[in-house]
Length: 247
Image (cartoon, rainbow, N blue to C red):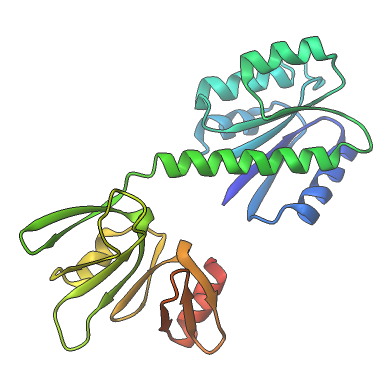
């Protein structure tokens, strides 16, 4: 989940942005609205750890700092890990200066028609944040298969399944990634131990099956879980509800 942060002293503008975001943004987000650079906003910038998309009114009516000044504080605290969108009526020359210093997603002129531009910029910001997360995603599972040891990145694991009537566990992966030479790896590592090592993108849907929620294609009300590679598993009513809530 991402945070979307609006900072504008125009209450009507904030309400219209909120309405437009709720109606048009398809990904899950939590909205924070500030009308001033107060202590709460200062602490949010310093201590928030959730990826954020900031929408700043560059002409914010504040005694000490405007939207550009707040954007500089964000960049100082978070470097370029969060994304920034500016709202203003400034000329293109000034816009180019701000783009060079802050590297925002966009600089949008305020008008009654600007909301679709904001939605487009927010979606672009989401894509950039996701791309960075994928690039920086270094979590991996170490397994032994025979005499060989493999390091399989979490992001490439589709599912993990205990083979029936056997102590072996099969790990199904995305072959095109990680320079892996096959789709399925086997190990004698206990599935319970494997699950303890994984992060929260994974869910153990039965005693013998772990799935990567990123690769879930469909969860049916009858407990059927269809994965992106075509694998189909069954799970409990309780787990079905949990998966639907998490996806």
